[in-house]
Image 1 (cartoon, one colour):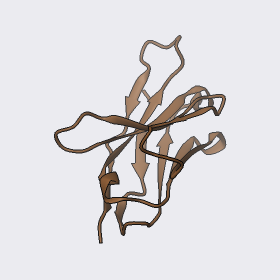
Image 2 (cartoon, one colour):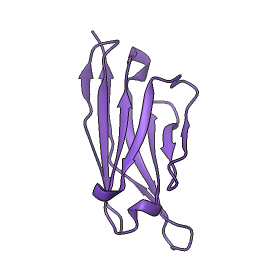
Image 3 (cartoon, one colour):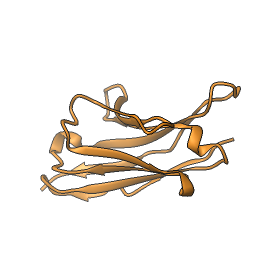
Image 4 (tube, helix red, strand yellow):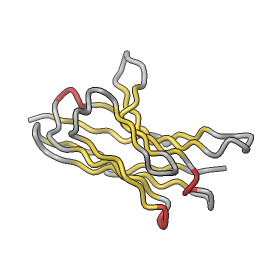
Length: 119
């Protein structure tokens, strides 16, 4: 069983920055695909950014070079650096870990961390 724990959310003013962290347990972390999703009430969860085991990255269209995802395999942690935050970025941000394909259970979610962008 993989435990996924997010941290770093909070209240920030428009134009500000925030860094989210996500720890995923297990000794196969370097092989996980890791991602950040976000969700607001009444809407479906949407992909913010993902980073593959080979460190290739993908971002949601709305990111527009404002966010950067990175990973520290030595510490089983993935980060989401968010700059130039806008009120529309207000959401619960979820960390997602996808284990390698040969494992029976692959999908793990954290409990989410609230990000609020407001003056």
